[in-house]
Image (tube, rainbow, N blue to C red; front, side, top):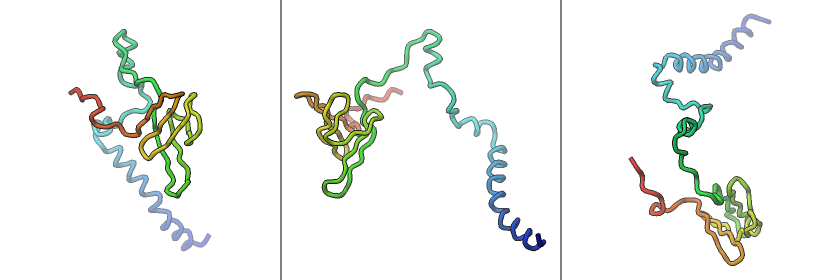
Length: 133
């Protein structure tokens, strides 16, 4: 290779190699406390060690279906899809024996026989438990 071509190649490659090296140097230069603030995703959930030591079990999420996401098309007659407890359902389909009666912008109505259950995407503030500090 010709020397100017090699120099041009490395001049263009330098910013690509330099940015990660600077980021790594900054991360390593941070004091231990600043690095320790990042939670380790491999650690077991909090409260599990107390359970293993014979303590009380952490509170368990209430049983029943959980509405996780909704996708509503803006076009007339478009798709209406919801994700309930990890399962994708459409309006008119079945979820765990219940008919998905309607999929709204913030709620899904399930019908089991004559009983209806409304799953809301957002919990109303007055329905939320009081915070304990």
